[in-house]
Image (cartoon, rainbow, N blue to C red; front, top):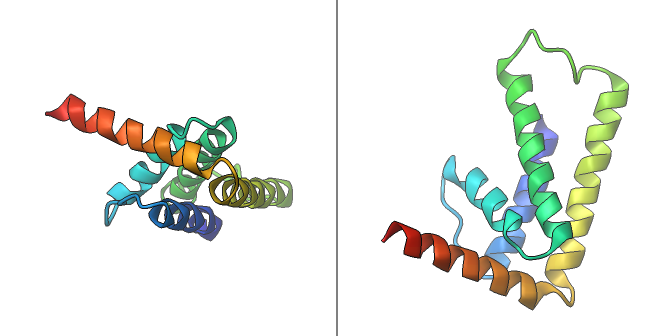
Length: 118
């Protein structure tokens, strides 16, 4: 599902623009969801969860060919609406007055995770 990548790339760019380093390759997907999920902002955290859902649906579309759950117009329209909402919410939150709070929360999360691995 190509639409997953629309949300993922917007989220990744917003995080990079805030100064965060995102892994190259497959690890980038986990970084984006983990960082958004620890943003200290319910709207951003929900967007991170939704991006994770989109990735799961993309994997189903790519690898579970017998699963036809999302092969109808209602499901497709719903997925498009979810993706539009993710992008809109992330752009508003990460470029708005909450940007510094979000950046601080993600930085704290990263610092904590590095401390747990040392």
